[in-house]
Length: 417
Ligand SMILES: Cc1ncc(COP(=O)(O)O)c(C=O)c1O
Image (cartoon, rainbow, N blue to C red):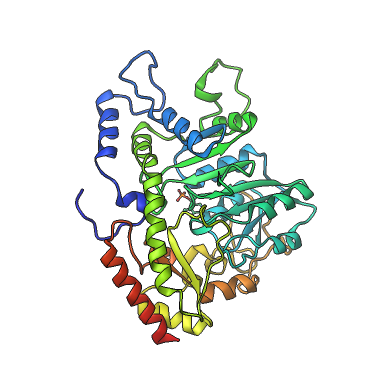
């Protein structure tokens, strides 16, 4: 593969002959669609096989391939029956798609604080629960699992649904089990910034047959799984088309086989970077709730003040996490103010229009603001300026390059402090 200047995610960096071979098989087979003649050996059923591989890797009963992480979230919300009148608690630090999917399900996103793990703060969730709360959306940000034990306790105590947004965390686990398997449904993304990629794409996992059947129908025009029993009169759900095609699945299948190598390399590289910084007492590393379960895509730390963080980011040519665009609620201009979403922006009549109880304001999550203003994301394998991680290393960097980057980072931090 020709060397590109920007390599957004680790999977993208490792694209090679395996993906090419899988893709060629599809092109030569003549079947580009997930459905084909199963009696024809030419039909490779890549989407179906990817689903089986994904379910096996995550140890979940069912996996469903879709065309993006956003549609994985939306399909999950719909499959779970979340809709008008329901509130869904979601962190103020995520990617906007988590919030948008709740809006497009016509439910109300209730923003909650994050803690030093940069995932939902269980203490704040308790404060945000109301009689309308139906679900919590836990986002495993930056490759690291959130506080699953605490969230499960809260969800159980209040009879709430738990949805896991694992878009940034394929390969992450908590206490030995893949993220996405603890909640009712888990949603993953295969866009270019993620652990593994197929350009775009998404996956849903669940252990519940009924949820799988509903999700399948929603993602494919109301059909039963694999369109078995498509006779008129048998469809009970209206669906749309969020299907994955064979080309995407071919690339994703080859990428999935690389996940162990990716994780191993990321862990090694992150260790090298972290060790170099370990004697700087003034910085605090992000809280990692499960060291083995962290994918290791980013090294995140907090500077002592927002000014020192800003200075450091300027010198490194990146931004503090608070400036990382639509990952932070206070930068989501379309949500701020007196519910400024118009019918033109969102074609549904959202139930919270002109609802004075639901207003998103800058400063409404002070703990999140403080952490993100002092926080920096250094790339270990995801170099995404939109995430604030323009500075750092990529998965294919040599140990010498990693050492040099680590030394530069250390010197710059010391100069700023
Ligand atoms: C936390 C989170 N949720 C959802 C998504 C949406 O995924 P996709 O871009 O595949 O639609 C992303 C993608 O950036 C994400 O980071």
